[in-house]
Length: 461
Image (cartoon, rainbow, N blue to C red):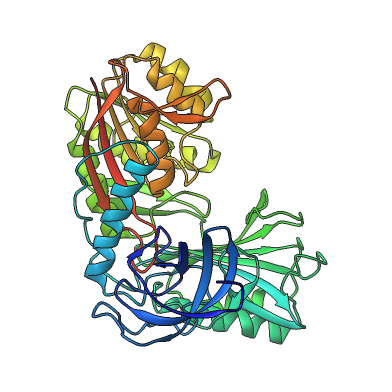
């Protein structure tokens, strides 16, 4: 089996990225978009030792779980990887994904519940983030191909609401009418880099990221947006740097108030262009309600990576006191407004700073607190894990969108993973003072994609 060979094989299972796993002649072959039980002709794209990667050329026996994808660029765009699979089967795959990650990475064998489903299989995302570029002499708007910064042009994205199609058309029209170019990452030329839209209860915050502080024709773009969004704010974000970071530091508000007030779970809150809000509103509500149910009325809660403070406020409303730690100043400012507006100033304290810096000091003041972790995809900083292991915290509520880093962090907290002399994480027998897993409940925050949100409850042994 060598590169460019064509073989016939059948998939036995799905890998962590939703690809089919084919075993043949002692080689494990990963084939995107091939389902278990499907027999296909496969072109070998790459092989290294007993691992190979291939492309399905023709599927001879389609699986019962296979459906026709709704997206015209499915398979080329790096976003969705599961649109070819019936939704109920996606849920089973994600349950296995979490269970296998905990076992293989974290050394933890435990019961993993079936994921809470999303009421919407498509059109569920309340945030759209599109790169704008220039490729082969043409302006392009779309999504990045997997593991690259090559933009796959598109005019529609089915996992976003209908307004996304109108917005993409407006961006193209704006560039054509005003003679503007998308950003060329290699040359560092072109004015338009990204368009980002957040929907908050039918109100919208639109941010156009550019390499120019003064953008020609911006009033025309606002005219186009007037015909798409009933109520919106518009920011121009200046980012001239050669970087993968989307937003620059300078936001200029050209229309609207920039923040909008919403209500969830009896809490009114404000969010802005750079405030973290979960992308699937229906699943977010289920997740937050379940998380809050795990705390007791007498608890004092520390909510790490707190964003705009919504979950912190829900804990403050139920419990004795809640602290929110967040590194983004805008989000902390929103959380302060939220606390005041909901009569929670006496029960809710918002701290702006890095969790790894703030949490160890705060645990000295609140040694018996219930700690909530909702870190970015990369997981919690090691200093955060160490601070918890050295504390007297009795309960940890961990929320994660990445099964791999979740498994790593939970493995450390349970003591199933420990560093060796070289600092490498190895599986070990957990000591008595570590935590044990009491609950693992996935939530399908991201239908059609390989990602899954998971809630884990940990308690001191």
